[in-house]
Amino acid sequence: MGSTLDPVAGAVLPVFGLVACGYLAGRAGLVTQASSAALNQFVYAFALPAMLFIAVYRGSLDEILSSGGFVGAVILATVGTALAGFALSHFVAGAPPAESTLRALNASFANTGYLGIPLVTMAYGERAALPAALATVATNFVSFALAIVCLELFVNPHRGGVRRALLGVVRSPLIWPVVLAIFFVGFETRLPVPVDRFATLLAAAAGPCALFAIGLFVSQLSIRAGAAASWQSSVLKLVLHPILMALLAYQVFAIDPLWAKIAVVGASLPLGATAFVLAQRYRLLEAETSTGAVVSTVASVLTVSIVMALLASR
Picture 1 (cartoon, rainbow, N blue to C red):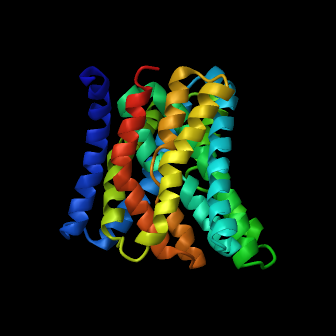
Picture 2: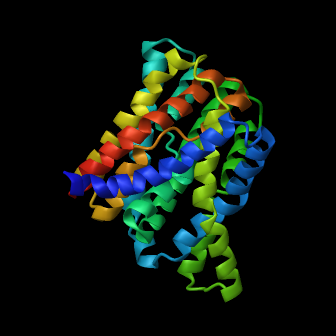
C-alpha cells in the first residue's frame, strides 16, 4: 500500500503545498490584493502561454495527430457533466437558464491550466505536458465557448454579443499558443536557440507562480455566502466528471494508458478560477461560484489523491 501511495504523495503534497503557501501569504497580508492581481496577470498572459507552447512544441506530430480520441473523451466528459449540472439546476431546482448555465460551468470546468499541468508533470514526467496542454485547450475552448454563447443569449441578447465573446475566446492566451506550437510542429520549424531558451525559462515560472496564485485567489474569498448552494456543483465536478472521463478513456476510446491517466486526473481537478470571471462579468452567482472554487480546491486534495492512487496500477 505504501509503495502505491508514495508517488501520489510525492506529487500531490508539493503541488498543494505551494497552493497552501499562497493561501497563507494572502491571509497573513504578506501579499496584497494588487500584488496578487499582478502575479495572476503574469501567469495568465506570459508564463502559462509559454508553458502550453513549449509542451506542444516539444511533442511529436504523430502524438498530436493521434490525440483525437483523447480530445474527444475530454470534450464529451466535460459536456456530459455540464449537462448534468444544467439539468439539476434548471429542471430539478427550477433555476433560470442563465443561472443554470453558470452552474453547468461550475460543475465541469477543471483547473487544468493552473493546477493540472504542474501536477501531472510532477507525477508522470515531462511526457505528461503535451496531453495536459491539449486538455487545457479543449476544456477552455469548449466550456467557455458554450457558456459564453448561452450567457450572451440568456443575459445580454444584443446583436453581435456572441460574436465578440467568441472572438475573445479564440484570442485567449490559453488557446493561441497551442495553435502556434502545432503550426511549428506540423511544418517542422525549429525556434532559434535564444528564443527556445527564453520560452523555456518563462515556461518554468508558470507552475510555481500559478500554484501560488491559486492560493492567493482562495485566500481572498469567503465561503459563507454561497456554502449551501455550491456543494452540488462541487460534487459533480469532483465525482461525476472523473467517473465519466474514466468510462470514456478506458471503455469507449482507445487511448494511450498514460494519456488516459492524465485525462482522468485532469477531470478530478477542482473548479477553475476563471469561472469566477464570468460570474462577475454577468453578475450571476458570484458568491456561489467563488465558494465552489474554494470548496472544490480544498476537497480536491483528497479526491485527486484517491484518483491517482486508483490509477497507480494501470
